[in-house]
Image 1: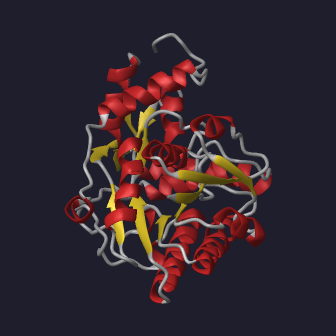
Image 2: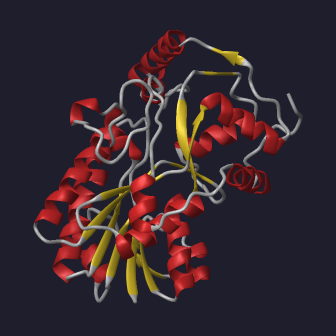
Length: 334
């Protein structure tokens, strides 16, 4: 089978690409001219240079492909020009869907995020059917991904055989950039997390999230979405688990939400508004932390055969990979 994938140089994308190659597929990776490709070439992918806004490059990459995996996304919680997020995530997604429709792809998998889903009041986990609107989205990244998902559903209504997957918070090895989630692990290893908020996330082993993409292509219902999640954990529990696998000490100071929000607002004003530079404290991430982002993957487990692995081995692999690749600058335990 010939398959085209966007975002293969990213964290989840490279794991999906490896599974597809291992399965025996002919994999075409669409990558930007500035993206490193040595790892993709070494695993057996064919490389096509282009981007989501270059329609000709999309048509060229998809030529003769049976399946399309659109995993690429502009995942930033701060941007000097927020319109870039909408161009890349919304316009780029429309372009991918239109190109897939043009080549007559047999199946398309679109990678969204649990950030587009609703979170029930009272702390219960959200699912694919929890009510949510664009007004509930915190920040431009979530808003752009919500709008992109709406565009994908429009294409599904027009007959495009597309399935949506919503990974939660992937962790594991090879988060090169790193993503905002990976940066938390790197900051922990370097002693830059002295305190924590009373918030929570759903962590998923990146191997599970990648495998969920292939399951969605095989068994997912057209136009439907599936949460590819793992374990719901408080931030304190996540930092404690990181301490256990890294040998570093976890922070014990919990700061009030209002204090964190005030500090982030001041930091945002100074760095983002006045100096036009990325702030030290992400205001969007603090605003997101107002609710525990807990989710339920029951639908993916029931309909796709999705399985969830223990999260500590994934954190262990992440820590080991960051250490082996020079991300940890502070070696002493403190």
